[in-house]
Each structure stands twice: as structure tokens, then as C-alpha cells.
Amino acid sequence: MKMIRMYTGADKRTRFEEMDPKLASPTQGSGRAAAQMTHLPAVTGQPLYRIVTAPDPSFHRAPQRNLITVLEGIVHLVSGTGESATLGPGDIFQAEDLEGDGHVVRFAPGTTRYTFLVLTLADQAPRR
Image (cartoon, rainbow, N blue to C red; front, side, top):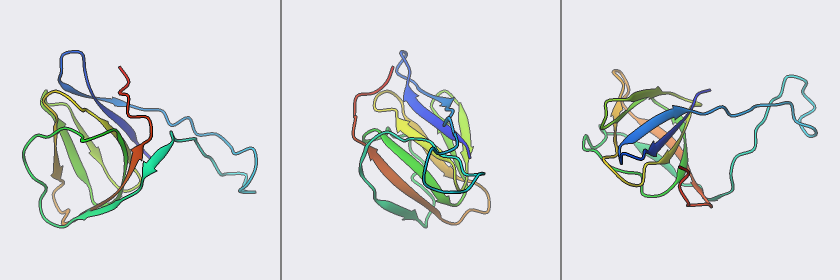
């Protein structure tokens, strides 16, 4: 599992950074010695999307702070600076590039559809 944060830098350009989900054994619950968990920020919405045509090739910004989990397909995120990240099933990106040049999403070769779960963060104040 990969976690990427996509944010607007001080220069108003979209940047990427890897996030450490800080997985740890749960203190109660699963009963499985090999289980690991982490706590996510509070969320308010949980829409499920499926894109079955090539994504819009134009640059855009996140409409709000979201945690997006890839369920199906492999996509390339590319910032205006040329930074890129490839994400597949089980990977998560925190979209918070609310200003600046934004990013573009592209299907990886062989990907014909992209399914993802969007968790809207309750706290909409961007981190700097």
C-alpha cells in the first residue's frame, strides 16, 4: 500500500510527497496477530466513482480535501512540474492541491477503467 499526498506548495505548484500511514497492531478487535491498522482523519462523504473512458487530459485542482483510494485500475498522477506518481488497487492519495496549476490523471497502458472511493475530509483547512 502506497500513500501519496498531493498538495499546493508555497510556489503555487502541485507537489507530491509520500505519507507514512503508521500502521500498528490494533489494541482490540480483530483477534488476528498479523492485523495492522491506522487511524484516518474524520470524513464526511463517501462517494464511489468509476471512470470507463480516458480521463480528461487537462490539468485541474482538487475541488476539496479528499482521501482517494484506488479500487481498480492503474493511474498516473502528473503535476505541472512534471512530478508523477503511479497508483494501483489499495493505494491512497490525499488530494489537497486546491490552488495553483493542479494535476492531471492518466490511465496506465492496459487500464480501461478506474474505480475509486472518495472520502471527503471533515477538516478542509489545507496543511502547509
